[in-house]
Image 1: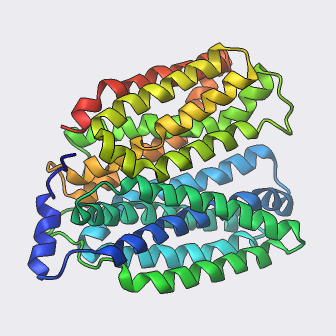
Image 2: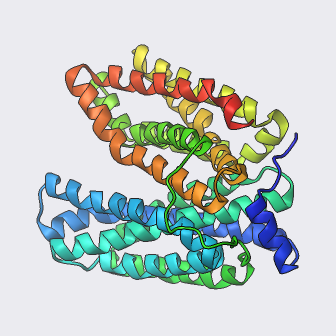
Length: 394
């Protein structure tokens, strides 16, 4: 399989320093940072019911509080593109990791709505920072390796998400308080950061005095839109998958979460095997057939009233979509119309807009028609990825 050339910004930074290119140690460090990011993000999920109880708030108020995470991420992501260009990925990853480790205990302690909103903003900003910085770092490491690695990196994020949710849930189950559970997680993550940080690649800066924020342009706009579609598809499974099974397929509320669990396992498996799949089939074939697989899964899920077929649909959506976003991040790092760090920041921000706006858009369509129709519209949008596959890997 042919690989795209290293962008001028990244290559000039590496050559200018006269340093050796990233090696095996940097590859392992990148995997651990992706794992850590997924772990920290998922550790928050089991705390949500305790936050609602502690603050004595309604579902509507809780929903507004949760928007603070997305708002913090959306604010920090464009700025992170500038920061990684000036400071390097290692510095930004360490700053974001420290913010995450400070925010997590506060999420288990804060007893006022205003305080919780501020902590969630910081938590969201830290997630946004580490998301952009680790993907820029991954692009440099992937290029230096000369082979596809991005899917595997994202697979470790998915693994971290599973481990984080299971770890905190398990600690709470055995009787620890939310604060005690989170502190054990923070200690573990701090150890991982300490072990990993010496191996993070320092020289990922680019030269020049560019602006703090650059509007996406040219090809990056297309990549951003496609990431919007992909993130909206993943978000639709998280936010609406269980409700679809209960309202449209008659599954009990206690079992409806199995749909998202099946989706998550299929996506994680697809990403862990993704580098070998991309190397064997090529980026174009993975984008085209993967998006078609996810589209067919959505159609089966919504059009066939059978639980076994619904389960197959969740598997097809998860596996088909698993390697699409990693390929788009690699493409953003390889394009030349914008600095790689700025392009990845723009694509990530537009993708996260899909997580923020997607659930509301699906809810509006479901309100005026049905949830099946709304998810069918997601399938139609997924076809845009199929149509644009050639342009992405040009």
